[in-house]
Every structure is written in structure tokens, then in C-alpha cells.
Amino acid sequence: MTDELLRRLLNRKTETRNLDYKEAFNWFSSTNDQKCEIIKEILGMLNTQDGGRIVIGVAVTTILPSALTSSLSSHSIQPRLTIFCASTPTHRVPARCTNI
Image (cartoon, rainbow, N blue to C red; front, side, top):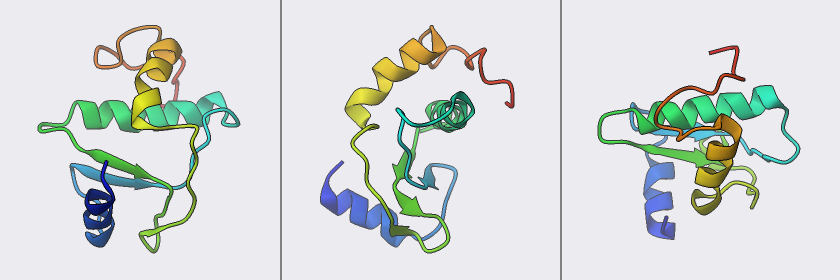
């Protein structure tokens, strides 16, 4: 994602069917329940017509950048989803996610 695209997404200041803002997230220190929640959001976006974007590291109340972490990026999410779900993520919701 380019800086310009990120600025445009943050300037929208509202979530839509194809845009979601999330607080900071660290895969390594998160519980399985927290991982399931972010996976649920990612899978939902993958299954949305025309796809979408999830911007992580945004204070949801102000839609301002709040924290950045290198533990979750577009380049690292697919292998983690595959391992965590034990399947290709677009096929099913992870069995470990009981609150879905």
C-alpha cells in the first residue's frame, strides 16, 4: 500500500463495506481469540464483492494512526492465515474460532 493510498483511506473517516479500521494488533502477543477476531475480519473482507481494505493501527474513535507494528503485514498475513486455519483462508472459517 502506498503512502498516498493510506492517506486517502484515513481521510475517509468512516468504515464502509470495503473499508475497516482496526486498532494496533500484534500477532505474536495476541491470544487465539484475538487472532480469530482478526482472521474473521480478513476472511469477511476476502468474501466481500470487490474485496476491500483493513487498515490496522488506527484509533477507531478518531480514525488517526495510533500504532504501527511489523508483526502483521500484507506480505506475512497469507502464510499465517494458512497455518492458523490449516486450510486456504478463502474456503472456510477456522475451526478454532468458536465465537463466529
